Amino acid sequence: MVRWQEIGLHAISVPIFKNLPEDTLCKISDVLEECYYQKGDYIIRQGARGDTFFIISKGQVRVTIRQPDTQEEKFIRTLGKGDFFGEKALQGDDLRTANIICDSPEGVTCLVIDRDTFNQLISNLDEIRNRYNDEGVSERKKYVQLRMLYP
Image: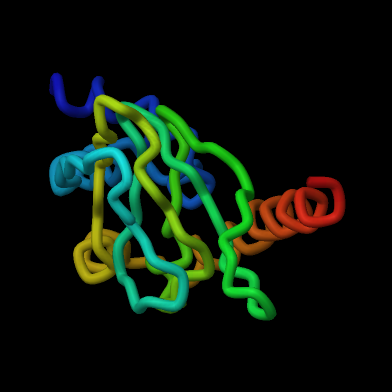
């Protein structure tokens, strides 16, 4: 029960988990793995394939996007405790759209789940995917578009 209390607040903040029953959230919390990254580590590289979703439990990461014309990395935003990334990987979109880089001197700890494990726990994934697409993706796209227009 301690693990669920630790993870529960983070999981509830994730749109794709928001409407799941508590017993399903408990099962997810049981299979989340804890991963540690040192400052400067690339947790995700843009363009790489991936099937893993991350919730930050300690520290901060920097989100950047490689510019196609110059290949320079453009800073998008900073994410910290309770934030998440890689959620598209749970839906089958396995090409990463941004770089996620550990930005904390003391490192970053993330709670991690892969697509196969998630799919085994969630039997009604299509319903969740549709609900998430309606609620969360459009908001994220708006935010990214605004950040690119007004850096």
